[in-house]
Image (cartoon, rainbow, N blue to C red; front, side):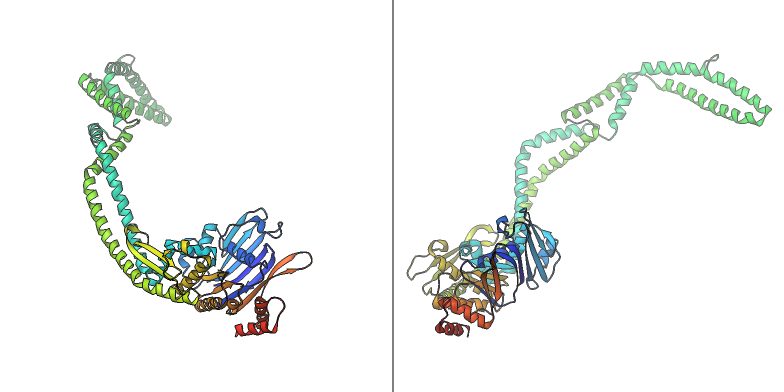
Length: 550
């Protein structure tokens, strides 16, 4: 429910603040007084795009703020999903800077226009004559029938199952496409995998083989260098071991002349032991190293396999080849199992189709049951609105595929005249007829679903007399369960309001301002009398106005 609206620096409004309550509120005023300005300001907090030309003072920003009591709209999940603080009294604010930049806030949290529009659509339903075109939309018509048929929970389950169906269908299609492509690549992938499986692939193997190859390919050089090392260490006259042995004897003798030589002797002894061990190992290496042409050829062959595979797959390391091997293993395995997987998905799809069909049939049955009631209600109400010969032909036919709303095609045809041809609403109904049909539908829907605040913007244009009186009765009845606004030029409608506001212009000598005020009972009599007979109030107009109010 809209509880407060504040508008600053917008069009002809300098500053305006209005409080609203529940029930039926009517807004009247002369043509050009600014009723459309009021609605335009409200539309900005509902998500309409801002226009810099709407600023009254181009040097100041425009601020429009609306308070809504949202406790009964079940909007907690919307606030949570959009990371907003939920408040039972929610404040929406829109600011338009002189630069043209626009900002929007919900409970002081900045939001995008998309979020603002989605929330606005769930708070206020604004209807004018041109917006009755929504009536011709097949989705709107189906939603109307579903609301009356109480299909909400069934549709929620159906859409959940439809999502699963679409997911399984997409997976099946992906498998089938994979199978088509895999059949072309299967042999080649098998060949590549076998090549990699035949190669010595393990982390570090390339480095090991390259080292082994260098040793086997340079046996003579290695033996020559080991021989030189052996001679340098073990020559009887000038070998390092022999010379260090003599040094060791010297250091032993020095230990007899003081403890300061003991550590020196220990260090020389340690060096001698290490050098002697090195000399022994060099001799051992000489004995181990031998030419092995067969092993050299084998190692070279393994390396060539690795090099060729790296070149073929455009990689640099054995580790990358291992990754490719794993990928090919998965592809080959998937190709081998794809037929089995396709069969499994096809069975899943059949089961899902059964579940969907069962729900769709149930939804369709409830729709068919409610259609005669809807047609009867529409025709009865429209008869009282001056359309006694209005009739509808509403039919469901099975659709060829699953839709988001079920498996039905809807035909919603209308005839305004007895014996006339039925046709689509947009082709056979006039603007005035569309307005009355929309009002009728909304009045029926209020009994079956929780609609937001609704605002009728001169939806009663083109009607008068008893028909306008009946339209007022319908709006008044709707206000028993929701907040209803009607911007109207008709005194018959205006008299039905529980609350009456007048929009008017005021000239202060320098500027023209749009004002709005809530009318007292006496002021309502005057306003209605002026709507009936003009500014020159006659006794009969006053009496008629009082009669309307009573």
